Image (cartoon, rainbow, N blue to C red; front, side, top):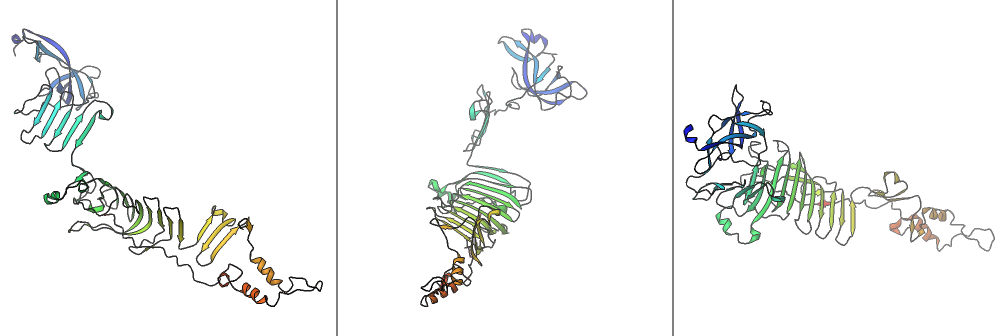
Length: 457
């Protein structure tokens, strides 16, 4: 417009919002892209000077959101803003934090926009972007996938981002040829149209959330978690997409540290409702071409804890780490009625502490039997127990235990009783002897075995 065209317009100053794009070289001007003003978003940048403060190079940089004092021409027959005032200065008066921002006007020339909404939508598919003056932004594909960004609000809806989709995936790219570290949450409805057609019940549609995170680009140390349907991502096998029901845990976590693997599972079955293991990795997972594309690791168990849904417990400790025919050093069983069984292949010591063994303890040794240390005595039904010393005394004095009519003369055991006394002293407890010692017999076997062929794939 020429100056004569503004005869019915008045220069009016307004504060607008913009973003600094660059500094004009060898000047005190910055290029600013205005995205919020009385004339809407500007098509290109305008040149602004900064007030002081913050009018120096160190205070303003590209990317800053700034408030700008702009002079418009206002008036005319419709009392509207029509343009920037000719030869007017635009001043940066300060920086601010932009809560939400649309970088320029977007629109589909074939669609109609409401006054408060900008749309970029494909009419055929229904996919596109919609942005409102309130700051609400939605991105849709025309199907079930929908992403909404909502500013302001209250509670859990305040400044929220929500996504609706059947499957979500996040992948860390360029970390290896297989892109191992990833996260997925979604629903599996079948491997192909024929498979989907066979799924008619709600129980046929598997839902899970699973992650696989490496410590570094090597695959020695990693963590895998899986919630919902059991389909854990493990080692190099986490690129498969087909899911088949094999086991029933609804929570699974695996930590692999070199040649040691820790696994915890919850909800598998009544007997193994909670299952926790520590295994030796004899051979890690391998990728194979045939279905399902995974070769499970070969594991040897060191520790296994099983807790049933009824509260029963089975704990195997000190495993040999063998595959298939594993043996353990200790097993502790507690059934749902509270019955306790403890087995150990080696010596067991029960005491109050390491320094109390010679005061109060029970030591069970498969080679040497059972030793009881009780400085303050052993009692049965409140009565002290007779020890071997009494038998020894009887043996030493068997010919002079009683007085007879001859005062002061010896009274030997009656000849009829003597054979039984002699045999009782000579024999052990297994042969009707008088003491609990046993010098002969077979050692305890110490065999605590398991043939559990566990697989975390």
